[in-house]
Image 1 (tube, rainbow, N blue to C red):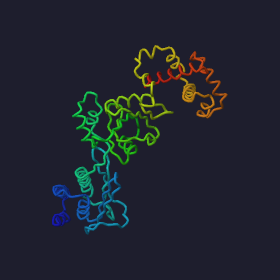
Image 2: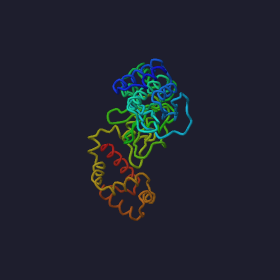
Image 3: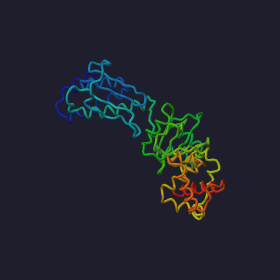
Image 4: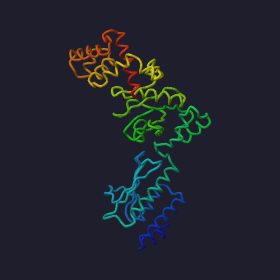
Length: 344
């Protein structure tokens, strides 16, 4: 290997140099080197400090050209390339060259990143979050036989004796980042199925969902039933209640089974549709239905209770429902929830 490094250091042809760099890393991979050996060889080839960082473990490996691991504070990286595995960035490789990048630095770092991903995948644990959607679909499918489901779970890294939580999400945040936030120290996998993201994890803390994410959490122990529950719970989310656990819905979950045409023809639901164009009225009714109290609704809306009272009088008149009556409040809650399910 030292002889190969010596020969490469005297190359004049850029094309030939590129080929030799590729051959250099092919040789390293055939020898099944680990990450420190990979960084050490790269530093010798580049004739400057080479570094590898893994995001999941925060492990940093830096070697100097003389083959020794260095603890000297790192110099600014002259070139950097991400390490990707399963289309997810799991780390970074870089060179600390004192001066402009060398003519072969780009190809060297590309090959180093590929080699580092291969080492992580081989020796693991490959701390990736994104998963093959086909495997995730097998896990949550109602049509999958149990042997295939168990095999898919094993391939995804879940032990057969561990509980599994299934979450349906809509999020602007990338699913790999979201999965890492929800379960930073335990197995978690994510994939996108149609327009809904699915997260599989051994444990889920609802408090860890960041702002702007809508999520439904399944309650069943069996993955396919938990996935149905999670999607149902997702439909009941609102800006005021962005994370819904299926168990918390109780009898309200039955509303998701009402045929859409029957829901549209209901007089109370039709009345909600009439006020939906006024955001202030909709927010006022939502706050009142959520709290069941004029004063608590006023606190939520940051308004004086007399202002909220006037709004509710107007809304009740438009709906044809007495919102001060307990039965009327139940009607308004059910109608508002059903209208939201239709709009989902």
